[in-house]
Image (tube, rainbow over all chains, first blue to last red; front, side, top):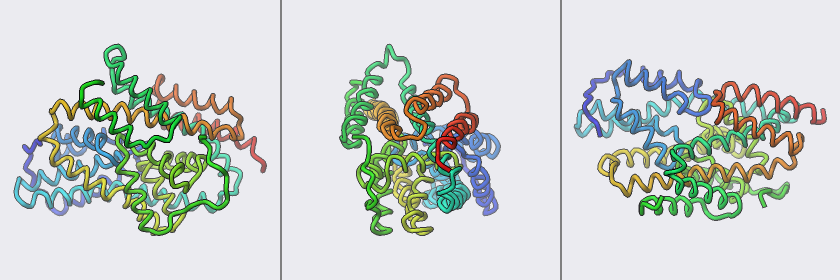
Length: 199
Length: 192
């Protein structure tokens, strides 16, 4: 891990960090990853609190590890905290503090809004407009899900060279669609094929 | 096969503890995103919601700011246990996975360039894409009973897919334009 940064953060800096994520939260329509460019601008370029490598690794790791991808923000906070600990025993505590501060900041506003909106929609669920909205969005949701799969699959790169990866994706699609095979078996199979260098 | 029977007596989480662990378990299976696992676990295994409800909630979760799987867990938790349920479901979705991802980050540096690790991640990435595509295909079965009818539904699916992948239009345009169109047409088909 790149630990070339040695920061001295004051309580006000931690508050400012919290408020930054708090303010970005409501802009994160379409997932927190959509706001990653702005986080890069603020944390890496403007404040100099994270290195380029720490920023990129946080995103890659959060996508590879299980759990919601928004956890990359916990990793940003973790790394930022480590940078303030200067390799002392306090570094891990500072990392944990950083992860918590950033996650609370990003989650609170959007969660409160979702909670209020859901309550409103539930109270008015018999209204024709609410029903039309919820049902009308269904085909669009499927389109978006297929588009997400497309974006994930495109990371495979060149179809002529990486055709085994495309084949693996296609077979997985058919298995999920047509069988009730547990998803963990599929993931384990993919990991094994990859580790053996077959795909 | 892709449809869930429409019964009035449906299973629901029995306790806050069950809710917490259901979402933790679900999140821990979600490599490369949790979407595919949510549909499998909540609709097909636990039957807390139908495919139709899943798509309705997902639409709302997608439109509101914030991570959509977290929004969805909040909505499910709130429906069964109120505000406490919402907090517990979100905590289940985030707490243990956060510990895990930080632990992974702490040991990652040592194995980052190991060819077997790189290969395994490649393979899992390819499977993750297939999981999401497979769930999309399964959900299409639920469109059979949609008020718009199968053909207009297929058209909306295709327009959305093309707009997002080939034309690469921002979601902030696709949602109001395509979604607005689909909702207006649906509104005209619904009884008042």
